Every structure is written in C-alpha cells, then in structure tokens.
Image (tube, rainbow, N blue to C red; front, side, top):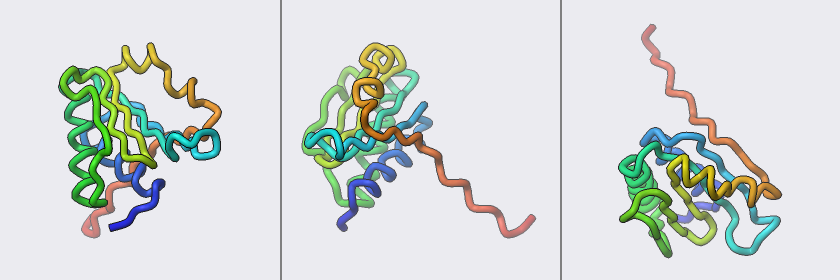
Length: 126
C-alpha cells in the first residue's frame, strides 16, 4: 500500500502516541534539505519506553503501510532510537538526549507541526 510521506509521518506519530510518547513533533523539512521530507521527533521518559515507542512505530508502519525501515540505530541502548524510512525519519529520545541534541532548533528552519491526537470517537449512547 502506498502512503505519501505526510500520511506516513502522521501514522508514525499515532504509533508513538499509542505508547505515551511525550512532546511529539513533526518537522517538515522537504523545502530545506534533500535528506528527507519529514522528521518525527518525540520523547520517552525511560530507555524502556523509548524502545517501546520505536517498536510501536516500526510495527505500525509495517502492518498499515507495508514499510520497513531502511536503517535503524540505537535500539540496544534505548536513549536515542533512529528509524529511517527514507521520506520520514523517526527519532525517539530520552528527555536528556533530546535537550542535549536539540534537533528542533537544528532543523528549526523547517516547518514544526505539533502532533495533536485525533479525538476518541464519541459514544453514540450517552
């Protein structure tokens, strides 16, 4: 199933949100680099949570978009995991790593879009 890069980054953000990722941001960088179209940057509060978020993203993109990462790094340590899907690069970091590397500032000339989860469907029965 083909999915454009914006749909893919949103799917990755939803998967991160499913594992309670913190401060999920989508950075559109296609106008400022040829490296990728989008970065997804989010935090996990522990190395265990960082790994869980990365696994959730990887599983969801494989199941719903038929996408496998071209490259993945950092899963063993769990402090900064990178999943490279070509048009979308997912980076899951602990708060300390995120603060230290400050990717949003580095790529700040791109468009930063905070992720807002879709509201849960309203129950038809009050």
